[in-house]
Image 1 (tube, rainbow, N blue to C red):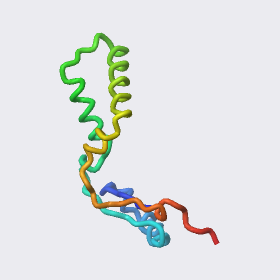
Image 2: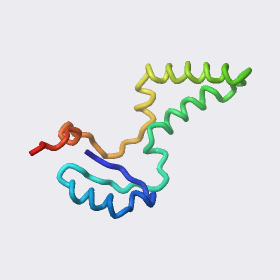
Image 3: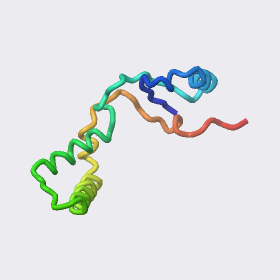
Image 4: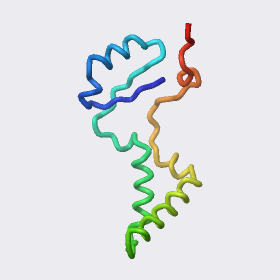
Amino acid sequence: MTQHRGTLNVHLAKELGDFAEEHQDWLQIFQLPSYAPELKPAEGIWSLLKRHLADFAAADLTHLTRVIKRKLKKIQYRPHLVDGGQPPTGLTMDDDAISPPDSA
């Protein structure tokens, strides 16, 4: 399992450090910058959504909600849009990293 953490004080707590040290056989922690929108998938989705809504004027909140849901649904069925908006990080997911450690 890989844990990404920012610089939030709770992430620097002694308990978290103790836990990470105790489980270093399966847990790897990467220090990330405190503000890195390019590493957050949601930022790319918001960018796509905002482009669709640039010249849109909703009649009311219900209309806005309906249009946003429709646009998100279109994005959902076009995963290449989401994948294409994410820069390479150099981080990989291994199947071994996802599975829990053997219980003895």
